[in-house]
Image (cartoon, rainbow, N blue to C red; front, side, top):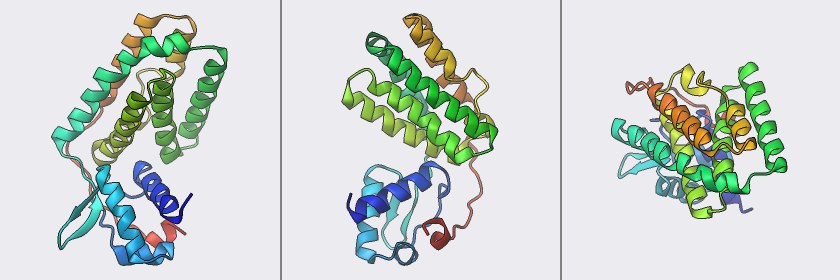
Length: 220
């Protein structure tokens, strides 16, 4: 993995885990100092993040973490509500005992993170459950799309979410694994749709106050 890729992964992780909140300015000089690389290298990473809509770059103003509009926030969740239940039949066809155990372990880790108050870890594990599940359907294009939507959902939660958005009370992911184990496709589709609709409803489109980040400490 190249140095640019390492920096990209660290910055993406910080955004997805809300350590870099929406609206946070990303000065090239401070990031260059934090990572010990040139501003040119930082600029390449910021441009890559901008292409994926995690970062916004404005002429004469520099880069900042994207703060999704209310419309975009709603459309991201609507896209997931439409798409993820449709993947369930293909996922069910490929489901087996090994996958069941793999996803049960993932859910247990997610639960433990919530119990320990490790919000960033819980958010990452929740997103991972959804996009890894999409990969089981063996359509890599759709799986990559779901992965991007999961990342963007996390950004939406960072901007507009509540505690309920992180620790959903609409039933944990283990319920879905149980349905897949039993081959109950329609029920699993209904569960997924209800789950995502509930999460969307937990989003309050009012925004949050910006915070200031110590880049040197964050990326040490």
